[in-house]
Length: 69
Image (cartoon, rainbow, N blue to C red; front, side, top):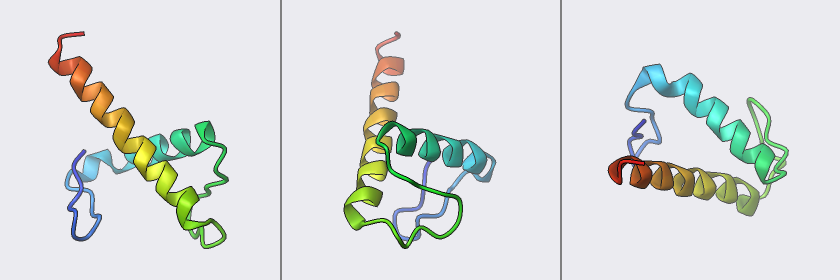
C-alpha cells in the first residue's frame, strides 16, 4: 500500500479501494465529515489529521507484524 510521495499516487492499484475504505474509517473515528469526491469544505487540519492518523495506524500494524504479534 505504498504511495508515490511526489504525486500521492497509489503504487499498488489493487489497494486503492482498501485505502479509500481505510481513509473513511479513520475519518469517522476522528469525526471528520469526509465524503467521496471533493472535500474543499474541510480545513487543512481536518484533512491532515486523517492522513496523520492513517500513517500512525499503518506503522503500528507493521510494527506488530514485525514483532510477530
